[in-house]
Image (cartoon, rainbow, N blue to C red; front, side, top):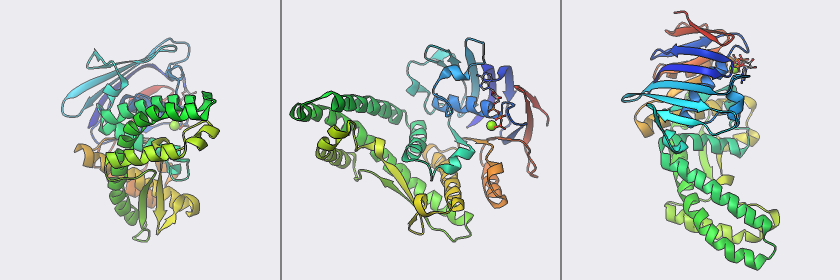
Length: 361
Ligand SMILES: Nc1ncnc2c1ncn2[C@@H]1O[C@H](COP(=O)(O)OP(=O)(O)OP(=O)(O)O)[C@@H](O)[C@H]1O
Ligand SMILES: [Mg+2]
């Protein structure tokens, strides 16, 4: 998968630019606040339909203008152009090869990318929500059905939580909830099943990469934390049981305490939970192992590497980790941002200055 060209119109601090990318390593160099992250953000927006920095499309539109447009031309098997139109007060419109899509899910998998920024080095330390997001972003790119299931799950969950808050009689609640719980468990069990498979696959790659990064010293293991089971049906049955068992508690709290929206990945080094007991260095290296394993998972699931977007991460890593990361970069198209690039590997250089891009090599 490669990005051929990106056009931005009124996007963040870009008025009107067009930039063509090389198949290998593309390095965007520029001082702070020139537009490096904005550019990478625009590319990733075409993969998952939303920004990781804001929920409001309005923030993405160049100040004092009333719309923004992104055109990303990518090549997977064939060449295609993904176009996003952003408006301040209405939903974004998306076209693929000039044909409008009706649902956001149709965008999933059209363009595969992995985004890596310094924040992700906190993946281990962060709350479970970030690790769920990590799984959900990838699984949605692998399979549109996962994305649809996730939005359906969130809608049912919202209804269930509303009911928990608004029902005053516990007996009435118990009767009404059983219908919702059946639906919640049906979708929830599929989500959990896919996530368990994902973690199982990720585990193998992350383990080997982590050994390499730590000179064979650290044994990294991953484990899905939540309702478990070997089949979707097993998981569904356990989930219904758990939901039923926790009705009283959920009613008192006013929200649902079991299900995939509460799950996590447990990450251990030599059997010790890194989130709680790992040193800062161990936590960051484990996060790097997870991100590098993520690239392999794409290859494993889709038969090709995604486009790798590295926003300012090199400056956060020591030399050994930088080299481990750059070693992998040669396998896939990479778009990397930094304030200064000083490595003797082949690359195409772009200079970013105040919302303009100049290809210099
Ligand atoms: N909607 C917008 N309209 C115009 N400018 C914007 C908008 N949103 C953000 N900006 C500006 O874009 C500029 C560049 O931001 P960006 O995050 O891309 O910088 P950067 O080159 O990645 O810098 P750093 O090296 O510090 O990470 C910022 O100065 C910011 O104020
Ligand atoms: Mg930046």
